[in-house]
Length: 480
Image 1 (cartoon, rainbow, N blue to C red):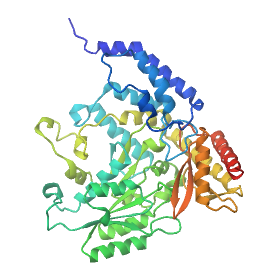
Image 2 (image 1 turned 135 degrees about the vertical axis):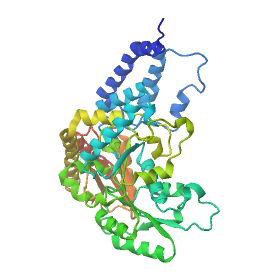
Image 3 (image 1 turned 180 degrees about the vertical axis):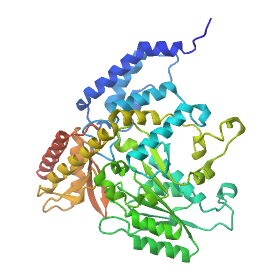
Image 4 (image 1 turned 45 degrees about the vertical axis):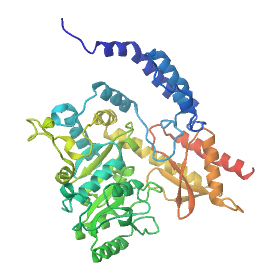
């Protein structure tokens, strides 16, 4: 008799999956009934759940009931239309289904042979993405989980590019190993510094380059810093430029920075994790001038392309250097296809690679180029409309121009002893309504509120409501 080892799973799905789908559809239909930020304190969820694994397995209905009663109400709801904090990561229907099916197949394409379709679909999907955002074919794209990990791999490749034999000899106990320096600005994402720590560069050798009045890297100051290090026998090994910084979405002049890097033979990594997808719109290509000169670029589809967390794409020109930094092939992973196929395990710290490309493929196929362009273009228009509403109010001001879909603003109350404290209280008052969630930054000692419009669920109506709650919260705070 033919065995059917997966019958139990199939039967379980037949019986229970419809319940989970119902929860999911109810969640999206009723998401406005939840506070975008739960009103709880640390430990409340943990204390509401059993502290030990059950002795015997539980009925699935009771598990789903706990999820509905304890977990869902106490989530921060990233898909909520009022979620306007950080950089939005929202999931679309096609992306959700792709994520589910990747769990069904549960593939691991560490080597081509371990899941050929997974490996090759990643190549096809990323080829589409590269074409969509107009990056040069000389860039080889590869999927990681987050921009932090993509950046770490890019900088590891940059270090390998120095030919210091670190792969074999390491960095400790070596008298022949010179200091190396990395260049960025104070507005560069903290993941750059984390990567530098991990790679042995050390915080001591991170150079924070001065910015101009637009909070963009000053190329002259960069070149000065590089020359100062060379004079001290410190090797400049990488520059990180950003298109769309985390705090303000400021833009470093990539073209000028690239020319400097080319002259001094320094690796240029461009962080476009948030704003990279806007390169699909002709009116935003000006921000990407010189991008073809970069050594590596990171773009996150989960930030602004409606693909469930997590998926980050690293574009790298010299993939052989990346491979040299990480490739290690034990006998049990060697295959007869190694000479003709790409084994993605060779290009990163991780061995296992889950099927992230599937959900991204679903999203790009379902919406298409024009569909994605329209959604992102609409988000930019919504952000600019919100910004006009802020600027037209005498009690509020825009702190920074809207480059993409992030609005940086603050209140300017008259006769206020501490404007920063007022703005902090204003943001907390807005967030306490449960209808919206804004985040903040501090720039040169100034507390700035950030409102981001890049969720799949953001509309003009939501932006109008957000502006109304800003004005209402300001009035209540000023009169309290």
